[in-house]
Length: 239
Length: 295
Image 1: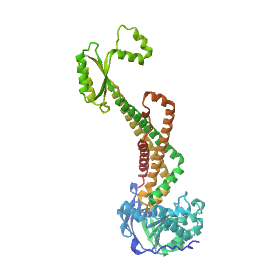
Image 2 (image 1 turned 60 degrees about the vertical axis):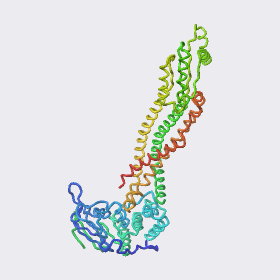
Image 3 (image 1 turned 45 degrees about the vertical axis):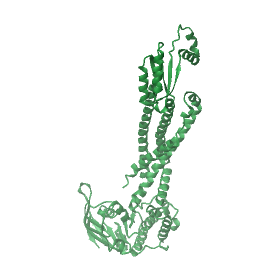
């Protein structure tokens, strides 16, 4: 089990993103032929919250995460993170913004040609962090997720659960104020899913805001956090 | 320095991963620069030959058999007055015949049957090397050619001009061919780097998602192009040197009899540097063309 290391998710000061971490106002995303992936979405996530985003396939969960990662821009309305309108950010500002956001994907998005350690250290490395710090941070988060003994292995030699833990370690290595997870347990069995959720809960307990998109209702019930249900791009339930 | 280290490590790893495609790109650049360097070598040699021959250029003033002493004095005075002329030598009819018999021993017997000496007397005029290619020498030749007692003026500038034109034409063809081949090499590098980019799509995506500066993402791909270009240039220079050494060994002696030994030499350090920098620049451009698709 993880959490054996000295590293722990850092307490996030309000100064990084402010009290209101995510705000959307009448947010819409329309694709070609006028199809709405998100329609008139108004939502608020405060600092330190753990929020589930759920709904059937095509509900707009991944679209909202892509907008939050600033991979796309809204068609209408506004999306703010830490009070900053993401649509207004220039290229350099997008880069700075993303350094404060950790991401976790269903398919892990690990680099198969690099070892576990290199995958995690890759983030500080491409941000120009000195090598000694890269190594220290990577080792600490790997220890925290309980995979320090698999540092030299390659991702494809590991189980799905282990791969997702590496992805979590990579998401945390830069001490982000916001973690976005898109179906992080989609490829895992129920036990491993709960294990991953426990890791995310620990990250959240330290003050990091966590937004998890999942269609796994049972997992949501077990974890028991605020849930926003989307359908056809609209909020249909808040619980 | 940290960024450069990162670029180099990533570029080197990518080159090693795509060995075959890298080899193609290096070969394409090597071919382009081999042609370009080859033309530099040939035109450089021809230019040196041209310069040497231009320095040794002279014109000959052939006199009519019935030239008077006064006319000869006038001609000599005109030549001596010219600031272009550094010296003149009178070659009499008998001396001209003797020179022919000496230089063309096989034909010497034919001249003994002639009723009279057919070779005209002449002045061989040498002029300052820097004036060799000037129009003033042309003007002097024309002026002397119109003087009484002068049968003809032969000036070897005409074929030197033709040789000069030929050198310029060859150089232009070399540049044109070099540019076309360099463009081809550039496209090859761009394709190979784009292939590398495609292979590392996941890494690039992660770099973008974690907010890596765009220069950090593009840098390794541009450096990959530079390394391919530089390697191609080195291969081209080595091949040129090998070709030059083989030709020198086989034809050096024969060439030495026609032209001065110093005229034939390999690319200078400066020219080799131009070839190297051109290769690296073509590679950098190819890498940049591919990497600029990353936004």
